[in-house]
Image 1 (tube, one colour):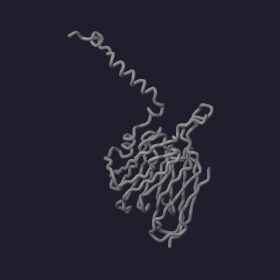
Image 2 (cartoon, rainbow over the protein chains, first blue to last red; image 1 turned 180 degrees about the vertical axis):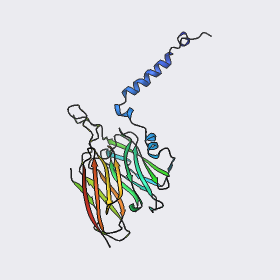
Image 3 (spheres, rainbow over the protein chains, first blue to last red; image 1 turned 120 degrees about the vertical axis):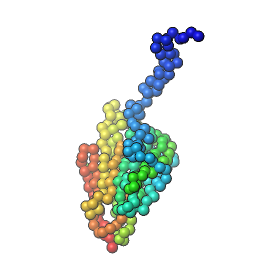
Image 4 (cartoon, each protein chain N blue to C red; image 1 turned 30 degrees about the vertical axis):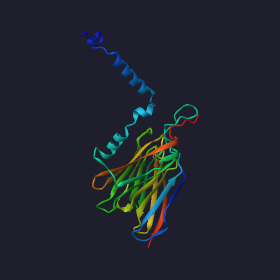
Length: 159
Length: 106
């Protein structure tokens, strides 16, 4: 069997060349910020410091269908007795596709009484939103919800 | 800086969990929008919100550009003693805006 002369000399094969070209085009066509931001999982890992995140004990309320991505009401509620020994320390919210992965980090304590926080957020497109709660024993619990967004936030031009 | 609105119940029973709502008028400019002249509008957001109960910090939040304009935050507190609940918002330039409310615990 004869070897492909191009490969023998350590050059790139035709298929490899095409594949590399297509990957390059994909990277170029992405908006500037989409390349720069960390992925959802990376952002959560930065928050937890690499600890395991378990499902449950947290409820994230997010409307499944959003008309205006500029103001989406969310509520995060964590199951916790909120005593000095057992309470929620932090609640963080992350998104999948906005220019920045972080949305907000809330610090709570036993004096909060209930681990419930509401706010209004921006969603640039239809995507997944994740809420992570850090308990006083150092465990992390999460809940995720997805929303379909009709009018996007953040990236519209004013011109 | 801007107008701030807080909603704290006037009176509560000892140990009752009360809901606190706080909002401030602020554009929360993300820094990702392009103005009519084709130049990016610089970022200007509220970075931190903190709530103190008789001087002790009981709740705080770090905000990012994904929080809507006129940021609204609702949370709960245990009514322990009568006193003042203070709210502080800090923006990118380090400027702060404060608001406060009195609560009577009986």
